[in-house]
Length: 483
Image (cartoon, rainbow, N blue to C red; front, top):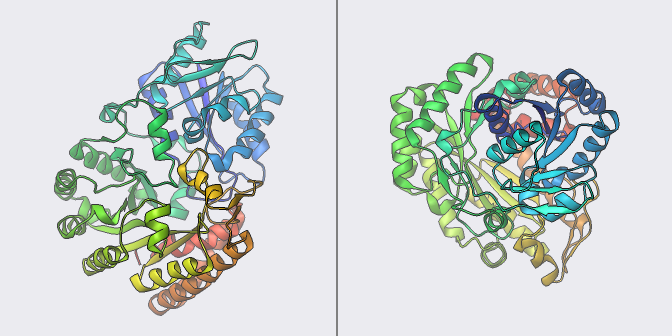
């Protein structure tokens, strides 16, 4: 059987080199008798429908797989309708974050979707393809919900999370047809040393998925094998533009012994001298010892969630029990060891006021965050955060064409309208963009402007969203990547 797996990114964002799709496609090709390929629209927004049809005619898949995330669900619908119009006999299965967060919506509300995968997809998709090939019933396939011929929904037993994630093959990024463009815009590849997150933040989908999929949620790679994977990928892709490894683990340095062993192997393999890395973390999972280890292995950037500058919003609304003083203490240590900080904040969440927005801006300035990112609050379905919007007197105004955490707002609080949230976001962007521009121009001089024109020109040519092209220029382009 042949399956084409779709990355439904029509947003203009150039960073969606989906590691989950890469794992899935690699697994099907290396561990089963079936064949898989990836159809990606990131650089085909202007002609996405022609690109879809051309790829389907070329690959002739028996099954179309859609990787569904909430913000891209309108795109998923358009892609499915277009594909089924031209290839009515092709089966459609959907998986990804949205199916694990809200399986009822996924199976009920999307035309032509015959089955969905809840949780990890590797084994469920394999069994689905096996049974389709043998023309057998899909009843009993764990992790799979489906519609029978009369349209009745069969909710099979949930499939537990994959525990031995070391047994999965190394993701093969060659399955992405536009990989060289991703390297041009981002200069990085994604890696995962662990899956899952133990923390209960109200705005995050992880807590919902933990409740929808059985089995231990937090799973770790062998740290030495993980370092060897990074080495193998670097050897493979360094000549094509790989300059930094980005560890996509929700909380990379969570367990101290794991970090220590990984760092030792990373240094032993010679990667610390050749390939810097960045990672996600929480402030309360890093201390001086871990910072010293990470710095010794050439960790250049740590990405942390600040969420809000107001402690009531952060602790009581978002359930992230970290003080402003703790942020200041740890970020000072990171800067002391030469590690830059990307800080993520959210604007306009439940209970926010103009005063709490100002608190966020003030804290980001005070902490001297190297790369501040300002998202607008997005109430993901089924999360506690979405429930709190109405409980506190706010309103979710609908989704429309919202496909990003960066642009637009659909939240109204008792004190803020969407236009207030957007205005404040642009105020923050202008302030920090000017600050970073002055810093980069002082160091790079004329090179800054030459690189800017080159990057944005490529973005226009490749159909990248202009706001994304400019935004990623400041953090990923050329010399800006590590500055």
